[in-house]
Image 1: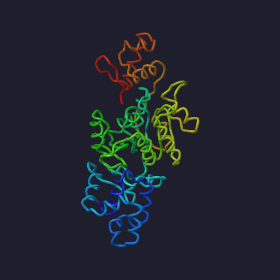
Image 2: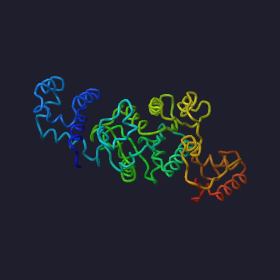
Image 3: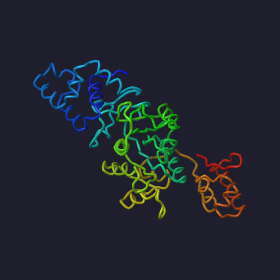
Amino acid sequence: MILTSTQKAVVLLDAFEKLEYKKKAQLIGAFSSPEKLFTLEKDNKRLYARFEEVFPSVAAVLRKKDLVEEMINSAVKGADGVITLFDDGYPENLKNTPVPPLVLYYKGNADLLKGNNRVAIVGSRKTMSLYYAEAERVSKELSEAGVTVVTGIADGGDDAAIKGAMKSGRIISVFAGGINCGYGQYKSALVNEIARNGLLLTEYPADRPARDFTYPVRNRIIAGLSRAAIIVSGTAKSGARYTAAYAADYGRDVLTFPYGLGVKSGELCNGLIKQGATVIENAEDAANALGIELNEKKQIKLEGNELVIYESIAEGVGDANKLVEKTGLKPYEVVAALGMLEMKGALIRSGAEYEIVK
């Protein structure tokens, strides 16, 4: 990876974990351009003396060129590239937030950061199967219409968003740690697939591990990159609440699914609705709220027993006998509804099980 002098200077400062963001921004702001950091001692000895007093750890590294290169190379290791706050390619909507990351480390298709046609889709790890399926459909249909979906990497709502948008390649997954830290062995295949088809993004140097506080902080990037946020699920204390709060603070539209009374995984969503969030139930609702035209497709109208059966299969019950038990319908009613759903193209049969057509 070839970095400009400006990128090297910003990446170097970013690599100082114990130097808080405000101090880094203050230091960069003291120069006409960030790369002046490397020539300060030669250009202005009086200012450099003051710099040594205020930032001794940075000054100590700058005296050792080998250490400078080592820190920079270590920070970008494993990434395909970086975009700093001073680069032309930095996303404008993220730049205009209160605390934009100094560096975006990425792996994959950085073209997804161009423009502003991005929508966040996030939810809790414990997302009910019906809502998971609907979130996946929303992500799929929005991404097929040219919208880039922005999310995290967790199970539940994030996972549904990723699966829905993966085929189109319009998916950005924002990490809460360095790009080489991953999220455990069970996630490695998914992470690699996102890097091939979409984009992995983080504000942290390569080997910086995710910590409890970096997850909510990460969510400001998910909201900042997006023009709207769709909240799939969450308890009152779910991490998705941070994305919703950042989105509202940034003036983004907040959309969410409605839940029944007493449903724990919908507490956040129902609370957001009380605060004025837009209620959606499907991709068409989301598209209408956002002024997006979905790709034309055959609309399938479901009613009565068909709807009952469809929702039960969406919840993971695909066997006809189990559908009789779950729904309380008579066997012939279940068989008739399954037949109609197959004819309408809403279901496919796989052995003894029925599956929803996605």
